[in-house]
Length: 241
Image (cartoon, rainbow, N blue to C red; front, top):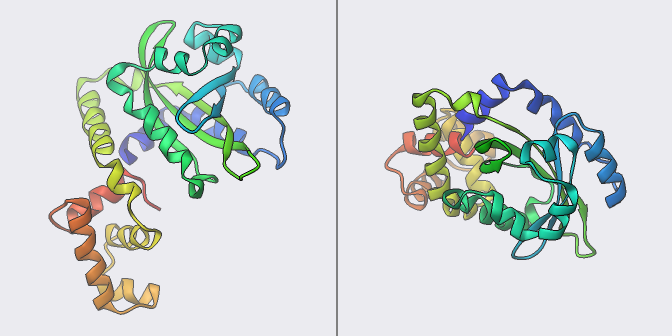
């Protein structure tokens, strides 16, 4: 997915710039969040997260125009609207999103993904970034802010579309493996992808090179790859930092 994200950030600069919207003050209220949403020049929406579902509670004019819907319809349909606009072949993106933010350790992380949406112009691939903005009493994500854009123009090329689908399929198939990784494993995987040797990684992390080799072996087995090249591909596509 990293390749696709880099292309989108390069070709659609407005998405990169729009991430400033995520600088939300602490103790923000839903009403303030709606004002932020409405004032943005980008496609912005607010979602309410439940344990097994989520719903769109607000969407600014650009978002409504893109989707071909009004705010009243969004609020009345709830989760049914999410299921209505996501293409059946892309429904896993919905459940990845729910699972990601049901993990409290992801509260301060941005979820970036592609969604095949039923827009006012027909089915379109879109790229969206989502981040928690308001939390409940238990400290879990309650309201999330999302900003996105259509990537239709990016995917006009058949070769680009094939590469995009290949990367997206890899992401979907291997998501469970990614979620099972510990922070230490991600740290070591990133260093492997950056071509550090076991001895260099050991020195950076103040552990023995034998421990690094053990992690490398375990990662190859856990992620179902054949070599360090496979580990590097996994790190790149999941944008492990």
